[in-house]
Image 1 (tube, protein in one colour):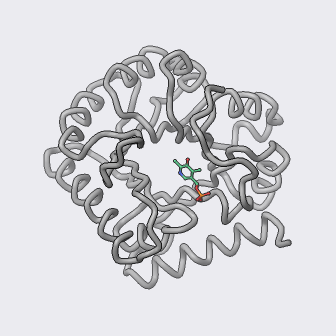
Image 2 (image 1 turned 120 degrees about the vertical axis):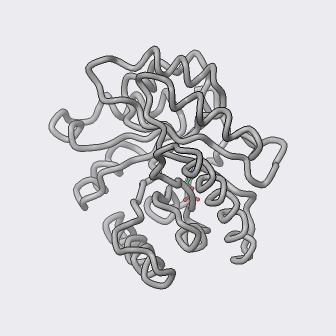
Length: 238
Ligand SMILES: *Cc1c(COP(=O)(O)O)cnc(C)c1O
């Protein structure tokens, strides 16, 4: 079994190779290590190997790990919330995270802005787009994105950075690219409308190359870094 350090290096090489192949500047894609379901020791091992950004999906689990993190490390690590958000958990997120990738409604954005402590930097936000139109998946439909983006960009304690998507899984590279391209085009339109966006959060273990080909600036990678999760991702009411 490869160590976390070895797997991290492999993923970074994959990212660098994709940057090169698709004409993206070296270093233009950030690796977010998705540590949901994995214990704090694994996060510390990844941090030891130089990884700084971690993604979590379940509030209760994430809070326990963040609060147990050694203080000297806590300052260095950047926590990203990427999961479904229940309104009654928004305060924990506003207090502890640097980024939220999964905002898809104004009411939630307003709560996060109101609950963001004043002494912290604005909370970085990506709007989640349901690009494949899957019924059961969270996220805005493409035609809802522009209105919410402009509303969120006005909220005082948030900083809108861009869009996030999880397309319907497919092994077909061209289909992967086509879905990511639609999100990149949506983002481009928002920029033309005057929003200062710099983040496209797209690509996971199975499709990060296609996402980088289409302009991803942040890939969210769990399995390829930490291994196969022992229980499937569900929206647990943690
Ligand atoms: C779990 C998760 C990931 C990581 O998926 P892998 O296939 O394990 O790389 C990325 N993004 C989101 C939103 C997730 O919930």
